[in-house]
Length: 80
Image (cartoon, rainbow, N blue to C red; front, side):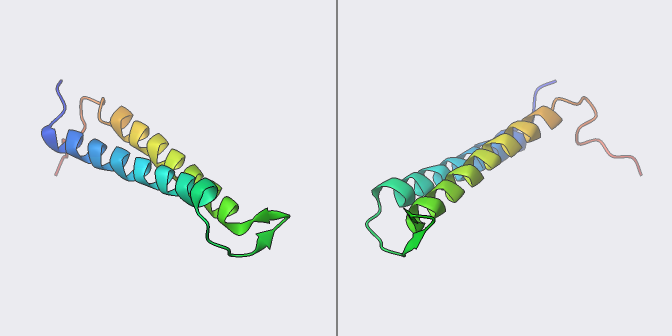
C-alpha cells in the first residue's frame, strides 16, 4: 500500500530538522570561535556541538522508526 503524501511530508520535515541539528552541532563543535569556558579540558562549545550532533542522529533514528511504523497495513485506520 502506498503511503499518503502527508506521511512523506512528515518524513521530509523530520529528516530536514535532524540534518539541521546535526549540521548546527558540527558548526558549534568544530568551527565556532565562541569562548564559553572549558569542561574536562575541552572547550564547552565542543561538548555542545557533540550534544547537538547526537540529538540530530537521534532524530534521524526516530524518522526511520516513523517510516517503519507506516508500513503497517492498518496504519491510519481507527475503529470507533
